[in-house]
Image (cartoon, rainbow, N blue to C red; front, side, top):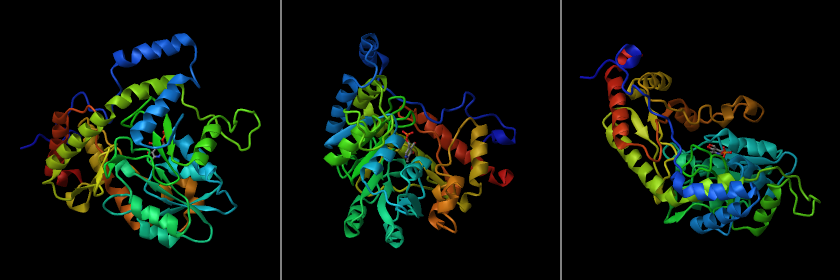
Length: 389
Ligand SMILES: Cc1ncc(COP(=O)(O)O)c(C=O)c1O
């Protein structure tokens, strides 16, 4: 028998609370000498450590160009600008099941997001839905590697060729993902990765744009520096989107641990799946054939058969000391700021997933016993589901 759930007056399962996420970085002793050297040198930005980090990541991701940035959002904005597709009324087809930054980059380029549905199992964009949305105003296609899963790279690349439309990938969650034996980084016109603190590889903040296209790379390099190619005469308008040396050092040292972080997260995901397998109504994101996900997040769908509605479940978990997130809710086409672009848009798969998704804690050094303990909490809540209604 289980104790009563904490939300119904029982004892809290995790008295201290479990963190939702705990950033993993290289041991201090490994980063400290270079951080100190950089600090004492007074060369805090645009220096040798960023360049070395970019070279290291190009090697690791097996891609020609890696450009270190202040954020993934900056990479999305500049990468899209580099495609030179900005025309009045231009539309970018984008999966609605993503983080707001994917859509914002389209807006910052004076383009309109056209939201499409995702696949019910992988949560990545449904290419049949993209094809339905293509029209004479379409200027590009965006895809997202949701939670570290691989989108249908081959299908998307074929579609991009068929309609002669540039394709880019928001791979914000994709450091640590392996697809068909290779890390991500070389797909489409460019990919972007986030190095913010919730990701497998972090520099505190930061982003990477990766591309095999020399022209895109040159544009983004100048673009992260206001659009200044060095002569102070800007051919295009950029941002300050640089990555500082301290961020580059932290991320570079931590990159040595990226594979071990991804392997461990896969163990965490397996422990969740095994621990929750016998609960009715719960299902998990399906990882695409040939993909080893980074598991930036572990996503559970709480369907009607589970008997506890998602928001009630989140509250009851939280009372036990188990925080969670409903990623991505609301989805793009339901965000207030995109009402102008989404009038009458109905995306049944995205809406169903957004209404039932719940992401419990996962981090790169998470103790598997804690994961089992969280599974126990799910069992307890299920046992009391009628009282939680
Ligand atoms: C799918 C997606 N795209 C873009 C971003 C933005 O990344 P950043 O915070 O590095 O700008 C995030 C952030 O988590 C994200 O989840």
